Length: 202
Image (cartoon, rainbow, N blue to C red):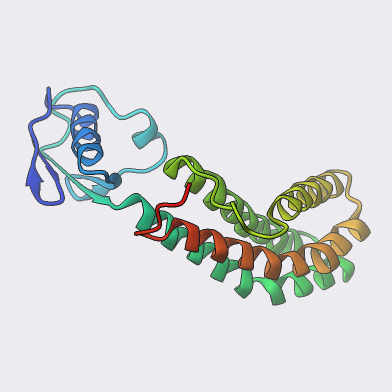
C-alpha cells in the first residue's frame, strides 16, 4: 500500500488505513498542520471511517491525504458559517410562515435545514477554539450572552417541535432566531479575525 500526505510518500507502520492515517497525522503535526482529507483508492473517507479507521491489512492499494494550516482552516470555516447564517435570514421568516400556514412535513424539513445551519455555526466556533486551543471569542463584545441565548433558544425550539407547539416553533424561528442570525454572523466573523493566520493571540 502506498500512502501520501500532500503528495509526499509516507512510511506507515503497516499496510492498513489506520496506520496510514496515523502516519499522516504525525507528519502533519510535526509541520504544525492538520489532516483535512483522506482518500482511499480515490474515494473520500468520512464519518466512522475516519473516527475508527480500518486496521485490516490490504484493503486498499493507495491512500492520499491532504493537510492544511489549522488557523487558515478555522478562519475559512468560520467565515463560511457566517455566510450561511446571513443567507438563511429570509428562510427563517418563510419557515415560520410555513409553520403557521399548517404546511406540515414540508415546513418541518425547512426547520430541520435551519437547525443544521445553526448547529454548523456553533460547531465551527467550538471546534475551532478546541483545535487552536484558544478562546476565539476573546475580546468580542457580548459573545457569552449570544452563545447562552442561542443555546436557550435552540432548546426551546427542540422542545416546541417535540410537543408539537407550532405557535412557539413559528415564533422562535421568525422572531428569535432570525435576528440572532445577523448577530451570530458578526460573532463568527470576529472569531475568524482572531483565528486568522499570523494572529498569535491567546
